[in-house]
Amino acid sequence: MSVIGPSCDPPSETSPGCGCAAKTEPGAEPGGGKAAGTAVATAVVAAACAACCVLPFTLPAVVLASAGSLIAVLDHAHGLMTKLSVAVVVCAWGWITWRSWTTGLKIRSSVLAAMCAATVLTATVALWPVMEPAVFHALGVAKKPKLPAG
Picture 1: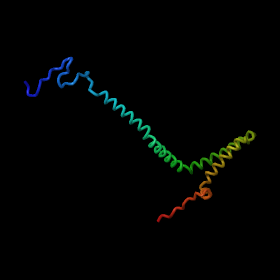
Picture 2: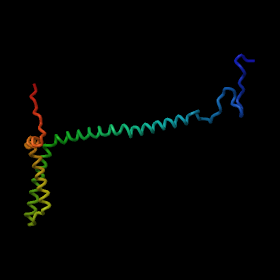
Picture 3: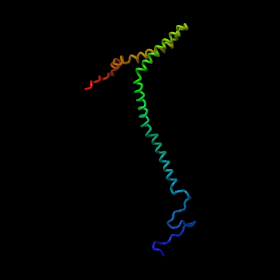
Picture 4: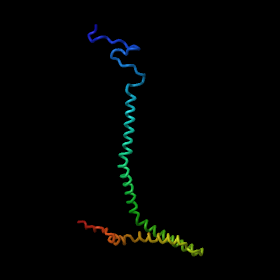
């Protein structure tokens, strides 16, 4: 007779034995499939939340930051691009008149319309620093004068 209680019978094919766990397949841990399935489901839900909830908030910020830096670069290039545009329009007028004179052909109306539009747009861009105060005043969008630092 034992002080601890009845003795444990060794497991058999019909009985797992007292207090012993049931036999499992070798290499398999109990509950491992459920834990892996839960982990996969959690990862899928996290990816869905990132795509549906986080991305719409972060993507516009990234796009606007990139666009802002591009606009800043283009703002610094404004003077050079304006000079380049004037040079291209002047050269295009020269080329068109030279070709018309050497071939004896009349300049087409579509070419004249395109060149006139290019000339007006280029002149507007080149004269914008002079025109800006008058245009803003006419539109009622007056810039506030800068106060002297002091």
